[in-house]
Amino acid sequence: MDTVHQHTDKSKDNESQMKFNWKLQPILPDEYTRLPSLEKSFIGILKDKKNISKVIVDLTNSLPTPQHLKRCSGLRIYLAYVNKVNGSQTNLKALLVENGFDISLLEDDYEIADIPSVAPRTKAQMTYALKYWPVNFHPNPYVEALISGSVFNDAQLRSLETYMKIAICIAEKSAVGTKDCNGSAIIVDPVNGNILSMAASSIDKHPMWHASMLAIDLVARLQGGGSWNLFNNAKDGTKIVESKYHNRMFPYYPECLNTKDSFPSESLLFKKPDQKNKNLKKKIDSKYEPYLCTGYWAILLQEPCPLCAMALLHSRVSRIFYGLSNPQTGILGSQAILHSIPGLNHRYQVWSSLLLDTCRKTLEKCRWIDGS
Ligand SMILES: [Zn+2]
Image 1 (cartoon, rainbow, N blue to C red):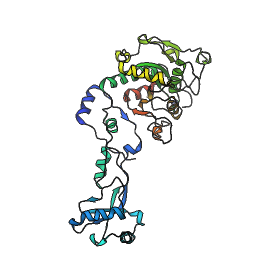
Image 2 (cartoon, protein in one colour):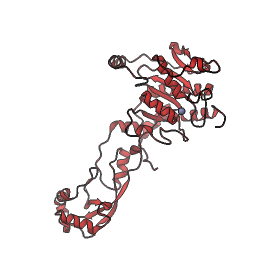
Image 3 (cartoon, rainbow, N blue to C red):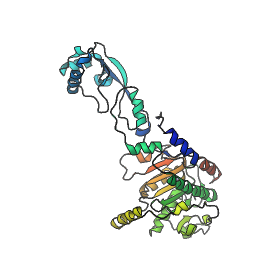
Image 4 (cartoon, rainbow, N blue to C red):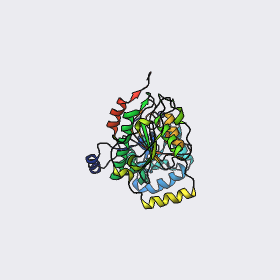
């Protein structure tokens, strides 16, 4: 599908490139990224400019324009989509006359032109649409910030990079998956920066032990739940071990991750909680029992498969950041955009390309079970 070349601020881009050799890409629904579709439309040419107000008023009563279109482009007047009058100029004239419009105000022959058939959602789409016809547009500042990449500050980007470096270490040490799903997952609390759980794909031990599935189950374990008895179930006696990495306790799986030697040291990870956020969270927590991963962020080596993406959705993480696309089975950008499907009872926001090149090299080094 054609996509709009996203507008970016060159100077900001260059500045960012100096600090990071990767750039987060928001995974947005098609309606924000595709080129606005066009539809053949009849355009009338006004004979005398002084009649423009009368023509606009009279047409508003007989043939209203779609809300996103302006009526005029100079002396050219939007009349109707060609399909609406079965492609016939004669039908259109009959309709206009029937509605009391004086067709002698327009040149006898109508033009047929491509006109945007949907409202632009972004500045880039608006720029494209304007090449064809004047449109009404109300920018959404948050969407524009997502597209330009300005939604995160440098400290947040640095933290995300560090989380992903840990995910990369985890995957290199332990991930065993299939061509459909492999890699590692970390779940963090963005309010205080703490890691809550981390896991590597362990599909050799159980078909459902994808990295995200395990990471979510470990958070559930922190809350007194959890679906799998990882202590007793593992054939090799693997146990969940609570890590004391940076003097913080969190569960992870499998046990071979029980070393901090190769993990990056990063004070940003465990920064002092922002008092304002901490108080807000306390207030929310005291009012509503938080459900599983509500408000947490997931950092994944690879775009999740349908099983993992749905588990993350049900767990209610608020944001997902992944490194590498999963063209085979990924449904957060590759095969589908799950979070844009109507009717879901929860939506997360998604970004790709976090440390993309390193993630690609790491996945190549991961282990794969036979047959994939
Ligand atoms: Zn998966």
